[in-house]
Image (cartoon, rainbow, N blue to C red; front, side, top):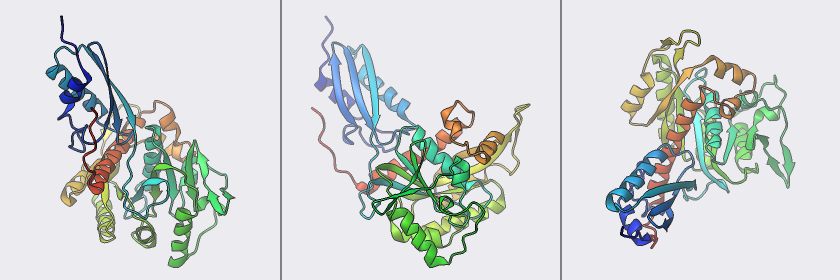
Length: 359
């Protein structure tokens, strides 16, 4: 008769199975929430540190391999996943917001706003609670990309952001006529950013994505002064002139002591929709080489895509994530790499003590 599997034996077999990104034991991290044994079948409930985990499949394979190797009598293994994003717990954060992510560039024209909105939509599509702040006061693009024309309301003397498919969004573009210019000096910009952060009812969010203006000026400085950002993402294109501007953005974030979450290469290549030929219009691999030289993560590249441009112009960018669009996969991959990077930084800064192990 085959030896019966016990819960205690399962927990012992799981010791040493690590989160691939965090490099720590799943049990020590408190990510194994429960173990159920029915005869020789085992069910393990794992709570991930982000719903946008890029290595969920590897965790499942590692758990299955550990149990079947150490407990040959185990017949079936079922791994169930939930996710709970952990905040930084540094103090000074926005109430209810676990992570604030700035998306910037050293220059305009590299598709920074499209990437910022896409990252927010992708994180939301993974199951995270996400908000989006358009901090480009002079040239707000978010209302256009999302096709939003409503105005925010006020409740209990706080601004209630506009909802885009359940995602709270705030932008200066909601408050001024479409073609009216904002002509403000630095102190007024600082005041606007302060209002958008602290006088908006953001609610409970895992991630607040902030689209910065394409400069290294007043707005990033205001953000650094007003709250402890989780970090910044820098967007660039492959050619040398864009990389030179990206270096300036990287330098600026470092001077402000803002963690660099990674570099995104937009317009990496063009894939012909008719013949499928790949053409590297702006060169190849420049952002990856820059990331390696500056010792910051390379989050990935995004191809130049006609649909992405058209859907953005028409305010239908969210449709990429509602349908099986070819651009969904590369944008989801970016968000997963970003979420994994944030989990690593959170674990490092929280310096979590070993949690009580089940059993």
